[in-house]
Image: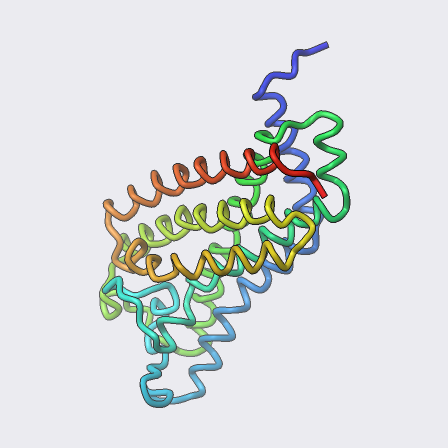
Length: 255
């Protein structure tokens, strides 16, 4: 009999969660939505015509506006609200749906009763859900390129106030910043458990408080400073909230 060390337990949990996620239609639906969303936004807004889509509503003129803004500010126009930052809320809903199914179906209760520990569960869920979120951001980026080409938008990064290197660093920052939203949703999922409405409501409400920070932390012309903050801050934030999630699971019932 092999000793069930922490590393072996975590490896097993990661395999189980990865298989369950890949087999779940929810993952592929979310990836499909992430791919189609920028195409629909860019193509549909291109029919508005002109630089103005109504008072205070500037239409997209550059494909990189679908990724973010270079000034790091939070604008309330079309380009500021309908960009890649929408994925943070889509990822939040995905985390709540996927984790809530564990408690609704009784899978979590059986898992904890038989062999798994709360820490293994939280760590595995964080890693697997973060990987899925990375896939959503990649799909959105590809969709933006397709939508921009169909809509005939400019691909000139300099016109958007950025560079090719800055856009790469921007995407890295956005991906790692998503760990914050994944961790928040996971904590509320441990609170709500099978009560999906409570998990989603709490996660989205908390995410709204952080939404204005996204353009500042992940501008289109991001540099090494923003990348370091997100690459280090995201995992640290996830570790803190992961510990809170374990505490909640240990102190509350599983139903």
